[in-house]
Length: 418
Image (cartoon, rainbow, N blue to C red; front, side):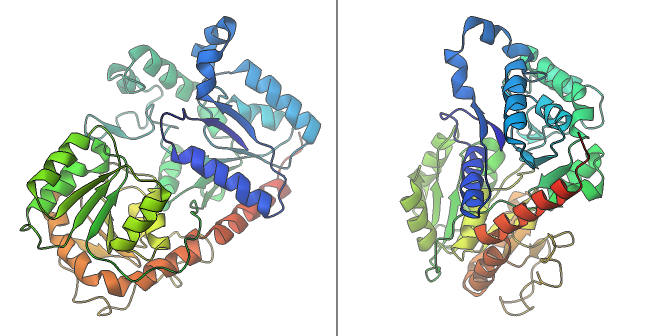
């Protein structure tokens, strides 16, 4: 399991997912050899090591040496790669292949193409680097860490390693939207598997609460402006309470909105117990991203707690709530992921609101979201059992871990000789 951990000061869902996968695989009887580096190591590196940092995204010689030694000593069946930047480099794929070890990569973002990995710039979706041999727009707009020099290095890395990425034996797309991104990049269908992440089972859900919950990073791409504008289109108190939890650069905006209205409460950052308690108090979880959000973990946590989700029709959100079912993982296809029967969650949907198995999606526009809020409130209790059922069938750790082991077995069985 190869992963470059993000800095601990920068909360990372990827770090959490890697830790959870290692624990779940180990519990299932798989021998896991962590090959982990951390960006927190950089300040304490020697001067020679720091001097090599600018080239490490392209080729990290120490990481290749250490990985090669591990491969020779332990002869693993599979290398599972998560994030390679900056201390591992995509070169680990070539190192593994040289020793006859097949490579699986979980795709957490769009960094095969986009230097920032987000397809989001200056408050709007941006795909200017799609289809380009070199991501010049990323350099012009300083898309990587706000630096033109670092953006040039990342754009060069993506260009150099295009053949490397296309040699990966199996890509794990977290949602159907990521699978579409990989196809657009030139990866054939037979090397793409849709397998989401899992979250621990919180147990039998509590009865539906009241009102709405936004839980996440308070940053522009998460759609706080969109949510607050849609909320203001309803009289104070008409929709029950809106709770907003999290932290980030838009905290002052949320605090100001909470001071204006009695039905809006800002909870600040919450620990795990606080998250559980707030989910219990709420009826609907909001996912109002204005970028192609890959896999918002809060949605899976909501489904696990029996809370349906109202989100924007972007990125992986439709897949998570079951509003995008044509390419579900094997065993969870359209016949088995049917939406709740018409009429079981209230009247027919107004135009522009699409109901999935475990929630609703709308265009990322204030009018559309404002229209969907009362629909979601009215249908929340009826849709709650379907939300929990979708979690148990697709996102439960037992289901996801078995699927991951099956992927490993399939890749290992078809791996070419070194």
